[in-house]
Image (cartoon, rainbow, N blue to C red; front, side, top):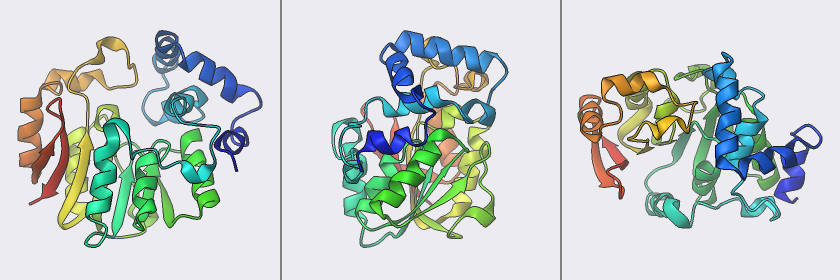
Length: 249
């Protein structure tokens, strides 16, 4: 099935195209999202039934391709995820994609035969990931994420070999508690694939918690200390001082 046709079954009639049109204008998109956030729908409530935000995740996807080609992380700036998935496929088995969005990172691991748990808030994009997984017949399970927690009863495994957390911490009201949970959920010598923003985005992303900036959240030096404190050691950095791959000590 074509990706667009599958997604149109999840979106109300006409909403996908109108949302994608807004997303083509980044300034307008953030203005609309800011209005939703400032109306009081913050945190999990912001994402529930927020078709515009889900379209924001979708609008760079090749929607007119078959769903089987959803594995798009093999190119551009996320090629390192494809490389990691390929490198560790014989030694690591269970993957948690936390804050999975539209699932492209989790689908990359599924492509290499990993058992993947997609975790995100109840939202249009989580429903899209479920539909894509069913269409692709990948080995996947799902968990509804509430803030920075996932109920243990929803997780398929007590321990994960790899946790993927790409551009999620800035959406969390308590990112340090989230790191503590990751440490407990990872197996010995487990891997954490992590990206987060080191700037305040100048208001262009209203759904990021600005309170974290008061703690020095936007400074790489702060995060280096936080990660060490929570038991993680960086083994691969990105081009902008992002920590992309860490190992549990």
